[in-house]
Length: 334
Image (cartoon, rainbow, N blue to C red):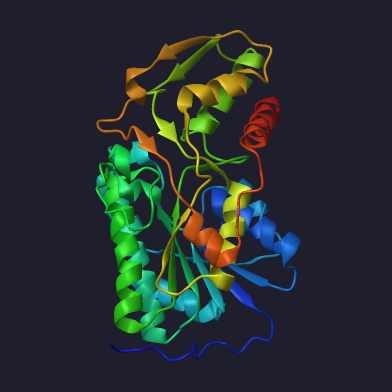
């Protein structure tokens, strides 16, 4: 096995953190966390060339921003050289399960090739630093009743293009550790949600519809897909603590579930959101929101990660929902 030496680029006195996908939902919350809890850290964010969301970029004050493209191997090498990182959080990805059915090619390119380009840049530059990969519990796919809650030893049986792409990225993380000694850590995040999440995702979609109904911008009807599926939700602010805990205490090469350990149906999520609202609504099934293949349940076991790092979720799900609804109320008013 060809091992890598310690990073030849580590010459900065302060710890430098490189975050790919820094302007995204999780990336912006990770920047918030680091600036609040670890002010000594220097943050370098990788932005996609000609980022089209100035609002997202404006939230990243205090971070050094460099431009590149995960699909351009040369630009990734240049970004790693410029960042000279001590820790890397690879969050850059195409992340919509529902959208992956319409654009499977994009999913494979961004999630698989983008991850491969980053790992290759680290190998070629001999940058051997903790590299936390944002993997996904969707990769587990089909689980049988006796396999719940899901543990890290569960085999992958993915059922969506997104899940396949994240399974491949996860396996590349393992392979580059095993073959080249890269200090990769794979976090298999279960559904995370919270303020600032795109309404392409179910909790944000429901919260946005409630806020728009309250404001009189839409009729009192909530459009839903399959509300019977059960999901294990984690607040994004707890998730970013998990990323930091993995970088500090995780075992290189390991995979860890990040989850609450319990699951709720989407109908329960909607009912809890409606409990915060005076609105009376009709719930309407929308066939366009149904997926060609869906998972009945995703419920994880984070015992290994808790034992390794001491991490545990701290934000109650009710608070997550209340904060998400408050965010969308502000968005609608503005």
